[in-house]
Length: 357
View 1 (tube, rainbow, N blue to C red):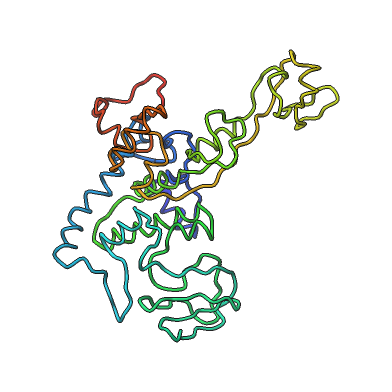
View 2 (view 1 turned 30 degrees about the vertical axis):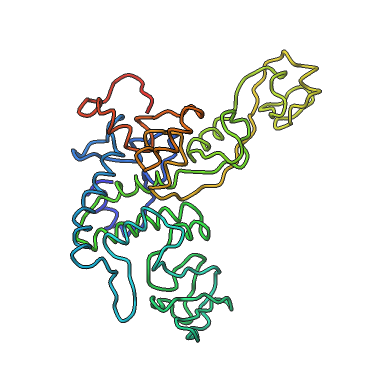
């Protein structure tokens, strides 16, 4: 998207376009160059660029000044006519850490329909009714919805920041990522800090790239209850076709018709015994997972990256579990810590040969 193309689209009356974003990149590891876009020189970013380090530095450096401002002003949230709003350091901190209960979070609609009534709650606050379903707005927030307004599931009914975890429950993980990135952008801009959207989207994409595996299918390295990268599971599901002997494929499904069995048929023990040596294209069993939103302090516990875990105060736990679990650290993984510690690649041009990323 160049300035010239943007100007032309606006001239043609186009108000929305579909673009690629690091927040929704499906590369099994890292972020692909096309989803990340141009670097500071205006050229497509090169493979091997430490975009995670760039994004985290851009987001955290302004927080130093914000934390000093919080210290000198007492660290209270802005309150206008009884309406408490999370701003600056406090708001950004809560979005990045995603506490179980986010103070000052907006009340979100749990149903679709029109706002039928707004009534004062006897104990304080307001009750907002959407299609006869009550939604409580606490006294420290103001009602933003209007009577007769059409509301979708997950839409805010009050002031406050939309809790990404709640948005994920109501509207799905993709909507939660967009909401979190937009809220972070608004909070930074409110403090006079301009951060490129793609840098925040890089961070948010990583925080939402965790999943708990409910059924690993034929992903041999996982068991139900394990944590994994969403993109790794998606990549596995997208490339489940493999060629192997039928005798070693019990429980899988045929990718093509074979004798009297149609494509998609399960390879039973009977088929394996009769035609075991024959090589066929088969489909591995699909893996199923539940995506998760994870705060920066909890994200390391959802990986086996020992260096990342130790950096987040999990020293004793990691030293106890690391050797037994065979933990390792990936300098090109989701966490920037191993890359910082290794350091050798900083300043080096990206390798021209095939690389892990």
